[in-house]
Image (cartoon, rainbow, N blue to C red; front, side, top):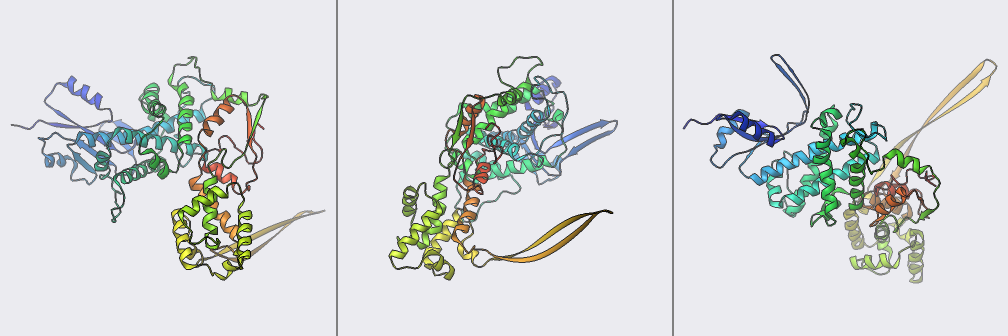
Amino acid sequence: NVPRPVCYACENDHDSVKVLAEKLNTPVRFVPVVVDRICWDRKIKEGIISIHSEAYPGLVTMLLDAEDDKEQHLVPWHGAKNVKITRDKSVYGFLKSRKLLCVNGTHTTLAFMTLCKFEADDHIGPPFGDHSLLTWDTASPEQRDCIWAWCVARVLLLLHENPIDVMLEGVKSDANFSVKSDGAASKEDIVISALIDYIENSLERISRTDDKTSRVLGGGLKNRFQGRLEMVETFIRAHPDLGDHAALVFEKARLSEDVMRFYITDLTENARRFSVKAGTKLKLQPPSMKKRLATMESPACVIFDFDGTLCDTERHLKEVAYVELAPYLLQQPPSEHGMREFVKMEAGKSFALMMESVDKDRKAAGLPDIATVRSQKKEDAQVLEMVDEWRIRMGLDPISVLRLTTTTKVITTTMTYTKTTPKGSITHTETSTDNITEKGEPDLLLDQQKTDLQFVMRKMAAPTDGSMTMLRELESSNIRFCIATTTGKDFVPVTVEAAGLRAFFPTDEKNPLG
């Protein structure tokens, strides 16, 4: 009845632990343990083991058998609060997969992105150098889009492989786990929010470490590519329909499916060259070849309209317009049905023309124009209350708040004059400071609409179905393309960025291929 000695195997590769246990052939019992903590350096000297790890306390998860004494297994950990013991193999499997996909997998994504950045474009085979790991903090906007696309793909893979109830039990282990007290959130909502929080937290953790590509890819370039990169791409490619949870994931992640698929395929194709032997002939074009093709003359070019063609903006444009104009429309009270009809009827019209049309209707009815009603704040209170509910749903400040808000900006202007004299140059500098008070609500409704629209588009803009694939095909075929639109220049760049199209349109002045 003497209990068997226990070895807590804190190793990601549980198969290697199993092999070790069989080789040792001792009565020692090996308990698999998942350690969710980043350690990026280890030095072993005589009598000293030095480990560099992140400050994040992490989570230790153990899987016990039904007959195990839970209290006995807590003893070695001295009552640490970040230890989770479970007998549920499904929950343990989820927590293990979450850690490997979202932390180790994200590390691998960053490592291959780093190699693509620093190694020669036409290099095929193991990298020549060891590079400091690219992180969210050091990444460019386009690189961040790629990183986030891979994060979201990994969340979708977890949702595909694990039941919601199992994941719900698992995420309760998180230190920052909480559920709204009103109980309105569904299990799906709770789990997806927790997964996105976890992967955002993982990106922050990785950004605070000083890591190298050699360590992250130390398990073998081919193994890491196939086991942590290509397997995600295979899953995404094999599932044209990503399941019932996908829509909510993309909504919460503020990402479109098309953008995600683009970056998953793009990095996989570009990183594959590092996983093969030097001299291997690949069917894929290295990026340097794409650059050379881009400098050659193309027999054709394509000019794209923007709204509704490349980018799914038309509905959002008109929904914002309806919310702005609702207090002044003759058809009262405003409604969801009224908004849908307005979106259909006003498609293609500018907001200025819509305002003119509303003022014309109001004049015919003997009512003051929009500017007068707005300046006197005489809108119907119940209508404004409904409009405020829509604005809050869109993420906008309600009118009731804007009308109570003022901000004071300190504007400092510095002017430098240089005068040349026979004795040399004399420089004179003058500095003036002005305090400018701005109201939360602009005087003009047109200015309010522009501000609101930019905010909404930063959140909601997405490419139209198939546009990303089409642009990639045009690019690979060396067919030049650009955007030509009458939409304001203060609006289009914001939307191009938000929709993930900046890689195809790197400048707002002139397309490099045009």
